[in-house]
Length: 429
Ligand code: B12
Ligand code: SF4
Image (cartoon, rainbow, N blue to C red; front, side, top):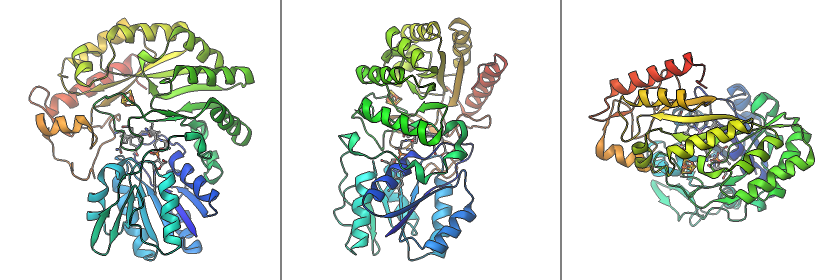
């Protein structure tokens, strides 16, 4: 049986290998399926169509997050009209929260997969291959005649090391340039930040062993010649002793490689010793999930960190010779136009190396989303299906909701003003 997975185009994207599709391809290949991945962010839609016409795969799998839903819906329409016999399945963070609505509205989609996809896609493909129904396949929502059926959810993978390495050999790795060396060494996060979508990996943290991670790095170095590694983990340092062992391993191997903690580390989850090891292992920069520098807002978003911790960790990071960048948001619960003063004073006082600034945009399924339903007013956008959802860190980002004490106009003005200020200070990333 043949399957092709597609990463649709997203707008304003940094180009990153779609590791999720890499894992799905790897588990299917291990079971003997014939799999291809097409990443439309770096490959042409012509290549994709040609492949479909030539190979006629029985299954087409599409990855979907809030950032690319419109592209996904346009794509599934085209695929199904040209290849009506293929089975179309959509997975990813968006599918994991909007599955039933997606199937109700987009008749081309045959099934959605909720949560981690590895075990589910194997079972789904095996059932399709043997002509059996999808009834009972955990994690699948599927169309059964004119009904939509929801099977029970599937538990996330406990022992991550039983997963093969993502099938990077199926990805156009040379087209990702400096982002080719991304890896995802742990899944899940037990913290409760209200804006964060944990629709795929959930709250239970699980990590690959240092041995697995070091083997993955070796593979990236040997087969893809990457010069730098970027960790996409939600919480790389949740288990400090695992993090130390990975760093010790990199140091012992004497790999000349740079490390970047891209997706954010908590300021309360590092210490001087770990930062020293990170530096020794080649770490050049860490992005810290700071989000706000107002203690009241930090409290309301349940970040669980203090201003003192932010100051101390940024200081220790810079002392260790590593760049300390921060993620900051404008427009969380409790924010008003005053956030500009707070941010400008903060960056004057605490010497950060860079700021990733975004306009707080709620994601369905999060507590932040429920808070807006109760306390805010949605603005003229499609908040049921997210067809015009903005990229929240671009210059033209716009608010999708407002509140009485922070109106849409104030949100936009404050975001732009803060952006301009950070640009002038050469801090905006
Ligand atoms: C790297 C990353 C990016 C990169 C590139 C993403 C890409 N390649 O498309 C950049 C920096 C550009 C980015 C941008 C954005 N991102 Co982002 N990003 C991530 C991050 C940190 C890692 C993604 C990853 O590789 N995960 C690891 C792999 C293994 O997981 P996975 O892709 O989810 O795949 C698994 C399952 O989802 C499933 N699956 C996935 N696809 C499919 C397909 C099929 C057919 C099946 C069956 C299963 C399946 O199986 C996989 C294996 O278990 C995640 C955080 C996270 N925890 O994942 C956020 C995350 C995906 N991003 C998120 C958001 C909100 C955004 C933005 C919309 C932010 C914004 N408003 O500007 C933009 C939009 C980008 C766009 N246009 O698509 C949210 C998505 C929430 C949601 N419910 O959709 C996440 C989850 C962060 C969060 N916790 O809130 N992002
Ligand atoms: S923002 Fe970070 S620390 Fe907070 S819940 Fe999400 S992954 Fe965990």
